[in-house]
Length: 80
Length: 80
Length: 158
Length: 158
Image 1 (cartoon, each protein chain N blue to C red):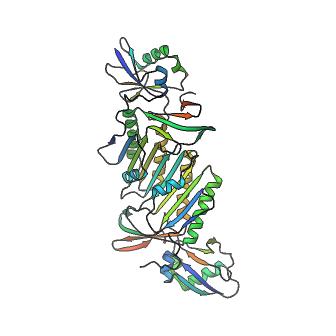
Image 2: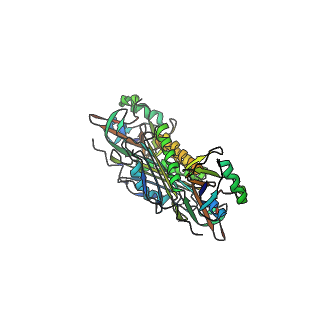
């Protein structure tokens, strides 16, 4: 499954693109995705935290990703 | 001592003038003034409460009035 | 009943302390949000809290036609100034603006605007709430509610 | 560094729920106090509380030149709508307006306006404070502080 992942703020600076492409094989959870991200971009481990949103909703690590989902990396927010 | 007393809100409705004249003899406190007011206008006893301001400051019952003071009857306030 | 004008003569005049940290006004015409914002804004502020009172259309189920506000102007200014000074002195607040209307107000009109600016928002919220709570207890301003079939001085009786 | 425009295309567009009790917007141009007031005002309101964020001139003693705000627009709108809906549902609140800026802001400019209208003021204050506290925790908007000699994504690192 090919994933397009939106990136914002410092996450975009880390991956150096606003739309990251990742290839994931078999059934994938957010936990798997985060492992892949950290392997490829160790800088993510230095963040205070980060979340994954699927179709514009925060989702927990056990959430299963589906083909066509809009996935986004959400680094610590700082609006207001 | 002749006192001019400013009245506002319901106090003005009770005394039917915005500047009440009262004659007070000898040393006078706010307590004396309030007694005179209630004698002359028993309606004041029906109010939730009322205060006397002297020269635009709230003063307690023992406060001694002086010639030339600006005295005001302050019924329950309801600004805002 | 007409309001007496004898001791309301300075309504509408602008009062300001020498310092520019507070701005206290009683006005006979519309209050202005943007004017209050400009008086409160400053480069050290991170959070600005406004309280804006508006005239409600009913009180305990009775339809309100309008409200009449009157002030013991000199003392009202001085009591509002005390509130502002207390906040400036005791809390981490850098601006306090209090503007109060007098005269006849219809439903939806604005009797009061209070603005508190602070480096951090928590202090601004607390101070703004303190200001309106205290204003309603101490500032010599009175309102009469005009109903379709009568009128009453608010809070006068138990 | 330039912000990518790919997923910021709907900035400035107005979003409104079918009901008129909430109004949530992300805007690329100046936020407007009077517009927010008009969206919040209603005849049942007795107290309206505003939170207005402003860009401070310093952070921990370092002089701030400007702030750059960006949003994951679709999700930011949906998270702000959740805040507003929660308030409308759970509390005695009759209007919630949340407008947030994106783009480059200078010192003194306004990143956010939150307005809560309620029949009684205590609920308005509490709800407004809840809204800004929650916005800062959940809404996917990010700001970068631009200093004279560097820049930093706020809150990104421990």
